[in-house]
Image (cartoon, rainbow, N blue to C red):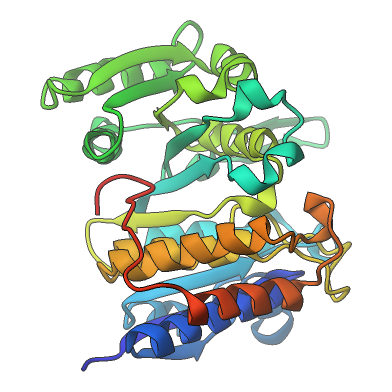
Amino acid sequence: MRDHSILLLPGDGIGPEVAREAVRVLEAIGRRSQIRFAFTEALIGGAALDRAGLPLPAETLQRCRSVDAIFLGAVGGPRWDGLPADRRPERGLLDLRRAIGVFANLRPARVLAPVLDASPLRPEVVASTDLLIVRELTGGIYFGEPRRLSEEEAVDTLRYHREEIVRVARVAFTLARGRRRRVVSVDKANVLASSQLWRGVVAEAAGEYPDVTLAHMLVDTAAMQLVRDPAAFDVILTENMFGDILSDLAGGVVGSIALLPSASIGAAPPALYEPVHGAAPDIAGRGIANPLGAILSVAMMLRHSFALDEAAARVEHAVEQVLRQGVRPPDLGGRATTEEVGDAVVNAIALSETPIPVAQREGGG
């Protein structure tokens, strides 16, 4: 049996804390399902700046290219805020995504029944929410040409090429086929030339998927509709910055951004997995970080990188089970520590039934 090789990039703030619980869950799955994982670890973000002088050391990038999958905790923090943009911890993550060619960021947001009360929305509004944001990851304003013209003026450019749009659109349409076959493409085509290109290219790509319904929506309308009727969405396809913002909004809709996992995929391995939340340095070291987004991210890893659908479903089932038992971290209104939440998920995996029904939460494989 070949080991599944995983590179751990714990990063900054609460990153190492949630990464630790994610690894424990993978180890529990390995014991339960007789799957072997081989873990190595490297530096990224602020931790890399402190020890190697760069947010993405060459050694880290070299290791990334030699593994089956990558798990990242979080990067950033106020201690590095004074650095130039190209030296900040976040630059390491942006450069990593581009270097390994992960162009589609999958961010599912599903209301978990045991914590329905954590959402600020009325239960009847939010109860059936189960959506997937497909965010283009290596283009747009984050990879434009920022220039500080003077102390009082700065410029950022937003650029997209047809092929960048086509490839992420195909991912969204393909995943929609495994879900409810509806895609909403979000843009700002009434104002931005890049969005006008986006809308036209997505409409062309939709012709390859006649079984999937496509609708276009302006980003401001999409933000309003996510709060007004989140259950109406199936797959949301959008560019880099809009996807970043809307997925945080989706975190609020389902009750906590710390519940949201993500997978960043490209044309070839490795894929990159990380919780949607940031480094949260204000709570780092206090043992109160919610590790469930990280744990659900390894479920996505099991499904997308290793085609272990049953193992992924086992992790997702365990998360819902422990929440049903009342094990909640503080952001969900409970008192369980990071480690206690991890313990509960690990125990639920060990005691889970065989087999677990497989549900492809994100659609596709």
